Length: 347
Image (cartoon, rainbow, N blue to C red; front, side, top):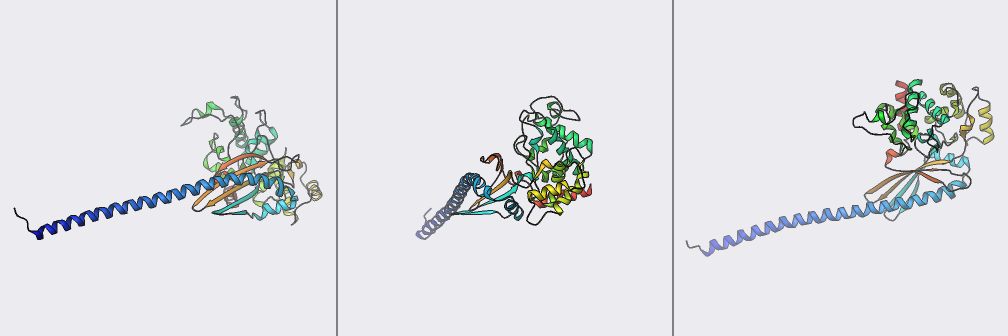
């Protein structure tokens, strides 16, 4: 068959167009891959920088607490907590935000055992009182305290009043064991025997984790009304926390705008209509704080939380006793507490 020059030119044109179309498609695909690779690289660099800034912020926090914060009078510290004003540190590529909260305004779940791994009866009683204020019956609150102790103590001896050791947890699906050590974070409470989601949401605004056996005195100057139950449980001692509740309400209601002085606090506690208050569990200074660190670098954000204990104790440096990632590890905000109170009212 003989092809004309005109038909050959058409074939060449079609072939050229086909090649150009294929090359255009390949170019678009390559450009898209390059764009995604550049974006991924930028994100990786931003998150790496955010991680380094978190580490730097940890050093800054320790220095801030040991120096600037330590120099504030108790009333100044209380005002800082009540204002909820964050510390903002600009960086070349973003910003670091620090939020401080008084760690005495929640119950340290690790305080129910001492350094020897044995149950601390005073802390156990305070936990029981808090659980009762949250709506649990006396026997259920007592049983939950025993379960909490068994989760942390190193032995396999079941505590009286309804404790739970490995034998109880190994029968669950899936099976697991007790940790035999202090809780790593408050969310670990969800693993306790008998703790369902409803109970966890009830306890969540009022519990936290810290050093083993450490129960910082409740700072009445920075305590918000939403955390009244913490104060009532601390003051209860051997009494029923419900009987102590009116005295706790009066302490917050009569608190001066500038906060209690030590003499005023002593007079208020001694003049309470409720006798036998555990006054050793309240104070007006800060010994433990939570710090939430939010680092932002371009599109990257990192959130880390810390707990420092031992502030102002024997002029020593604050002890870092807790480190966690994400907002769930931080002590809940006021809105979460309000939801818990609504659930309590509806029980």
